[in-house]
View 1: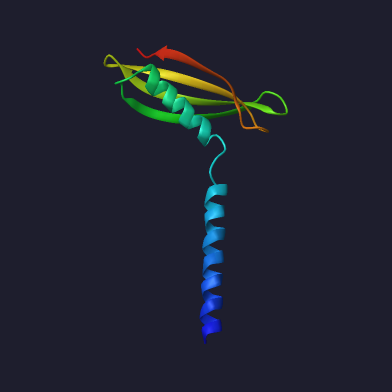
View 2 (view 1 turned 45 degrees about the horizontal axis):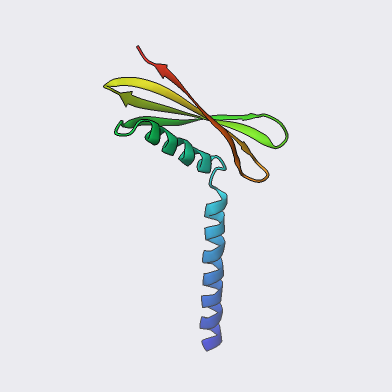
Length: 107
């Protein structure tokens, strides 16, 4: 009887461990750079509310480097402003290469 409970406990622990790995594996690889882009927008516009956020996609620059684009809608002095943040990074070593922000005022 003790062997049965011990076996079930070990099996349960293994299954829970596998489930955690699956959850982490499902995270998009651009998530890290989205957090960086959001932090930069909040730093550039302190006190202004970020109203909307969208991942706009990825462009392959070469075999190792990609460019991820994020779009933010920020209210600046009561006027909506669209901010596009482009993050270039290396897929192999997961390092940030460059970050550019472009601003587009809405009418």
